[in-house]
Image (cartoon, rainbow, N blue to C red; front, side):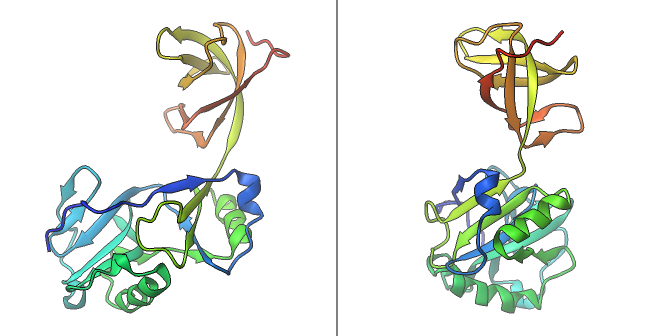
Amino acid sequence: MNRRLNRQLPHFSSVDLETGLSWHGGGDYRYEEKIDGWYCEADASGLYFKNKQAALPDSLPDYLQDCRIVGELKAGTLHAFDIIHKGNRQLWQMPLNERLNWLQEAQAHFPSWIVPIRHGHGGEFLEAILAEGGEGVVAKHLGAFFGKMGAWIKCKRQETHDCLVTARNIGKDSAQISLRGSPVGNVTVPSCVSVGEVIEVRCHSITKSGKLREPVYIRTRHDLTLA
């Protein structure tokens, strides 16, 4: 059961927070928590990531020996959201609503290090996840096969900050930026942005090391100056 990651992997499209909070639950989509972990596929032979593999934390029970479970691995726990093989059945070719039936049957046999992903009701669920400090929500089309382009739509936490441009990386269209006097990383900017200007940057959050996570330039704040 040593399958490499040689099929189409999940592809995300994104929407802004305002759109995500307006999602209606139900219908053609399932809304799942987006875990801030590592994409991982697990079967009896090990854990498979996009660019590496690792040993299982513990052996799988008999029922799961011929399964491949997909999820996000965080702090030693696999948050399972899909199942793509059961024996010789290529479940990834089935629509999600059918795969979820197989996953629900498999859940009864999960060891302690595998837990089912949380899911909920559209924008209300997204709001609750963000209130807990979570990353966001993924809307998945119930009729899509695993890895279908455009079938997964993510909406994540967003915050904006006014940052000072402290240096330009010539030839790379990027700038070094600081926030409240501390360096917070680099961001891609238009060529017209200069050292000493203030720019508005959108990011997911600020890391423990004080860097902006996934920063995106929004605009130059010509109305602001920072020391």
